[in-house]
Image (tube, rainbow, N blue to C red; front, side, top):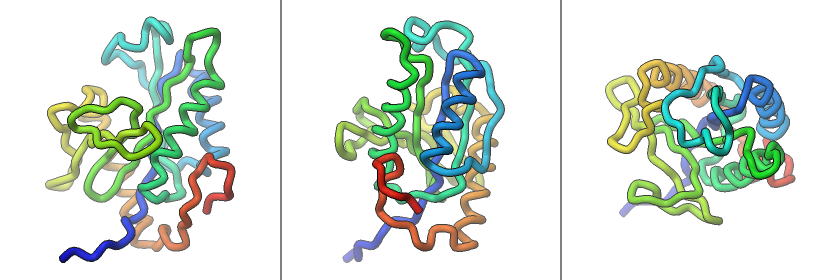
Length: 192
């Protein structure tokens, strides 16, 4: 018989896709106000993997991945997705989003993303939010799965996510997860 126990704390990561560098900077600042200081920030990169966002957000999109110093509980992910959806709405001009935020987390075993769209590999969590198993960690590196988006499977991004995971493992060893509470970052209660 397995004995239920709390899951290990995880490392919050967010993909910021924006119509220009100004949008990246503004949203990163807003995310830091909610989730605390970022600790690993990727460079702004041209987003050329798909034209899916072009009708709504325009051309010449820029993407940046960021992780946050403060660890979270995995069960906080739906609340974080709902909060980042609110940040997207704040940045909407007319009916056009200027930013797309995809929060997720890195654990020792995988990288997952929160989404509002269900599918065969996306189990339901709560409040209209599903979780997408995006990368798995084995043999000392992250690996893509058949459904992993090409930008997440890119070798440069895999190396970046490995770097974030390395930082996360150090934090676990240093006891950074001690004292976490169940507050949902972004829900108005004080987070640790």
